Amino acid sequence: MENESTGRARIYKIGACLLVAVFAQTTLKQTISPKLGYIDWLLLIAVYVSMMREPVLALLTGTVAGILYDMSSGRDVPMGVSGIAYIVAAYIGYWVSTSFLVEGLLIRVATVAGASVVAAILRLSLYTFTVDVKMPVQAALELILGPTVNLIVSIPLFLALDQLFDFGRRAKMRRAEAMRNAPRRRKWLVKKDPRWKMGRKKPKFRFR
Image (cartoon, rainbow, N blue to C red; front, side, top):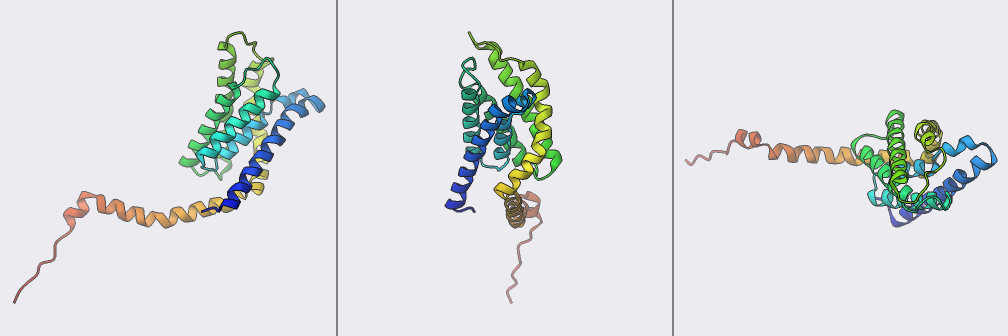
């Protein structure tokens, strides 16, 4: 179990990552190249945090990331649209992390791909069906190029975040805890099996 200081330090790190992400999302495409605008840095941070297997933290990160994205996108973008998309993406990352081991590169790439596609489709749909709101420029290209660019960027980014959040140590702790609980759970399942009860024989006492 993590102590209070460790959890607080993690929250500070996530907040710093979100600030850096929104700065990169708004600055890189203006100073270096417009093509860098297809990288959804906030989405990548939200997906990475969701793979920590903490649902409340994933929900809060997705919400804050969506608010930061909408605030930095201009007046034509309605507040809350990206928040919904990021929360759904965070849910996908959390579901994958609770179903599979997310230390592998293949699982991470698949998670980023699925979350990016779903978030882009959801955001585009909300922009389209929102009343009196103009669709952002090049939204269709974002749907096509966004997930691809996110996949490429997520590999080195997640490796750097692993070092920042000490992901390897926490993964080992989870595996060790799972191995400790496995014999106990196996014993409980065996006892619940009716065949185990039928196979048991009560001891016979003989009186002389």
